Each structure stands twice: as structure tokens, then as C-alpha cells.
Image (cartoon, rainbow, N blue to C red; front, side, top):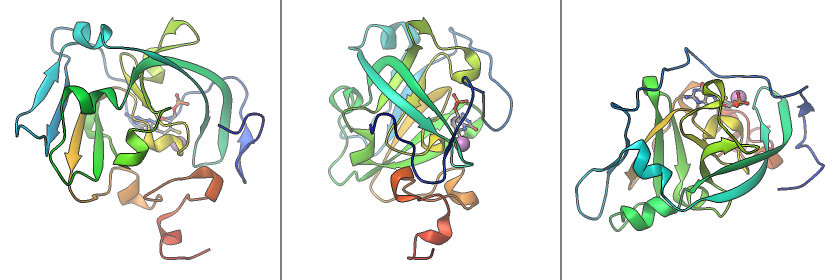
Length: 195
Ligand SMILES: Nc1nc2c(c(=O)[nH]1)N[C@H]1C(S)=C(S)[C@@H](COP(=O)(O)O)O[C@H]1N2
Ligand SMILES: [Mo]
């Protein structure tokens, strides 16, 4: 994180407004699970209940959030499971290079494996010492502080291991495949060296 600085073209929002596409899902603990599937080493799908996720190791991550539409919020403290923990619990097959992070209602975001296992990529359960609010992603929300906000699904339900890249929800709708805010990677037309 580059503390006290905003990426080019970003402006600071007041407080922490809520921004996402579609309705807020209701949490049903009895039906909820987190799954890792796709190119796992075992070929099997791994699945955990919310109670099982709650006892996974946790870290604290300080983050600013940058929405690709141009607003940023700063000074967040997230607490949750380091994303790379999943690679220990559910080893990927050889050749896995990307993941698709899946949320309720089919929202998805693709990530390079290197971005997913970065030290500060966290599956957050808490924000500023309180359980996440449902609008911000309770019970589980992926936070990838070094990428634009659309790479961090709220209401995370699954991680798909992929041996080839595939575009997620916003990446298919004109947003940049990598989404580094410091490099101004907002739009897909920039990927082939455009402005
Ligand atoms: N499931 C889901 N997660 C999502 C989104 C969404 O539409 N659906 N929008 C993303 C986008 S574009 C942004 S900028 C952030 C906003 O998170 P915030 O409302 O907590 O600031 O959530 C991300 N996670
Ligand atoms: Mo966003």
C-alpha cells in the first residue's frame, strides 16, 4: 500500500459508501459453504462450512479501496483468512496460473495466481474490529488491496483453479483484465497498449 496517496484519476469518497451490482444476498449459515474447485491436485472439490472458515488462521491487512469508476476509500483494516491459505488446504494441480473468485448470484473476478497469493490478499470476515456488514460482503469478502475494487468479490463462495486465464464479470464488460490502479488499468481497450 502507498499510504496517503491515491492512484491517478481517483478522488476520495466521504465515509465508506456501498457500491456493487445487483441485490444483497441473505446469509443462510446452514446452506453456506466455501468451495475450491476446478484444477485441484486431487481432482476433487474442497468445501468448508462457515464455522470451519472461522477457525482458519487469520491476518490483519490495512488497505485502501479503489473503485474503477474513480472513487477511493482509505484507511480500512480488514481481518480474515489469508487467501494463500487455500492453496495449502486445497493444493492446485500443476499448471494452475489463474483463479476465478466466485460470489453469490454468479458475480466473478479473475485473478492471476500471483495476485491471489499476495501477502495482503485476504478473505475478510471483519472490518475495523467488527463483523463485515452485509452490504460490504458479510460473511466473506475477498480483498485485493493492490487491484481495483472489482477484483474483490463480496459474498465470496468459491475459488476456481484455472490453468488458463478466463475473464470474470466486469472483465467481460469492458474492464481491464489485470486492474492495477497505480498503472491506470481501468478499461479492456488499454490491454493491447491503447491509451
Ligand atoms: N459480489 C460482488 N462483489 C463486488 C461487486 C459486485 O458487484 N458484486 N462490486 C465490486 C466493486 S466494482 C467494488 S468497487 C467493490 C466496492 O466495495 P465497497 O462497497 O465495500 O466499497 O466491491 C466489489 N465487489
Ligand atoms: Mo468498483
